[in-house]
Image (cartoon, rainbow, N blue to C red):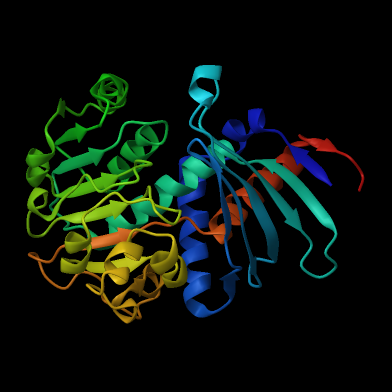
Length: 319
């Protein structure tokens, strides 16, 4: 078994690698070549979450599990709040293949999934990017979104505004004007990415203009919520996996309130393989409910392992 430590991941997997791996994972799911196992997710108290996401991709010969969660006290300890590791197994024999640091991989695959949704669902002429949230993953989201659309400027809101300058620095790196705004001004955005760990909705239907695309990336646990259920119900909803969307994703609230039928939610993979047309018109609000699926974690981890083996890196423990 090869151990690929967290410290090696940045030199092994690029954002472009993550984009390609996640895109292939979406397509494999849509074709029925891959499926996710039920998510195990537990609240540990004081905002801490821990769980397991796993799955099998027959086409990619990937079987494995990501173990990890969210630990909001980590920032005070000099650590990022999201902590995880990915374990890969031989799908034929069950033997362990690799243990891979999952923190950067999670950020890269989350941003890649959002960017793929923006690429396929946002209006081509989108110029203003809105971001709700300014935590660790917000910068990854901004960089990934900027790779698929030529945005003219970035506006952002965060519950704790003192965190916004760090996101503004990322925008500056990309040559994009940045402005902190109240939520009401999110109506100026053509694309909005929500990336918070909120237990209550902050983005309301009144904050979103017709024709906007939303990538809602923060809700991945029962009880979390970033946007108003009425907003979800008014949009054309797409997701990584419908079962997760209605149980732990943003759609859980709209479905639970009877405002949205689960049958109306479209897997994004269906758009990628041409089974669904995606956006129907320029006035339509599209919403991608990114719950984060285990198959995407396995796909990016497999890239890290392949690169490590090619370069003679990692720690082989001979299991």
